[in-house]
Image 1: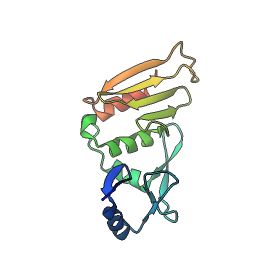
Image 2: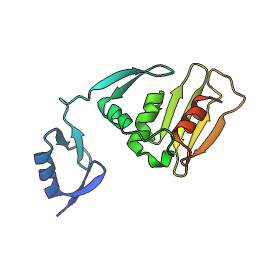
Image 3: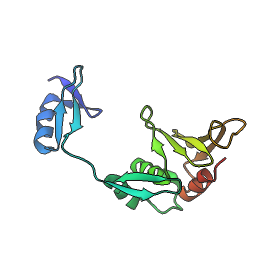
Length: 160
């Protein structure tokens, strides 16, 4: 039986029938190239909530709000947080995710701009010299995932 890719996972073609039966909110679309993909049905829209951030207004989806409610205590190390919780936390802080690299995030504060990457061993933030502060060069800081979320948040939002 041939294997196909559905949402970055390999399934047997018989699984496609099972998915479409049990997940009526999704449709299987066949682009002009192989593999088949599983995409949300066009009539389904995610509900978003507008919240105020320290830097500007950002939109959080209902999924993000759910993950924020599941955040561990702010004193716990970042390695004890799930990736969806970390992503929702970054959105809440005002970061937005790169479309090219899902591990890269950007933030634009009124006095500095930065690019954050979730690396394998640590979290790296680079304050950009092209931002409003006119830094002499990019300033890079790395934080271990063993640090608490509170400490990392304070260090990041403190700026260059």
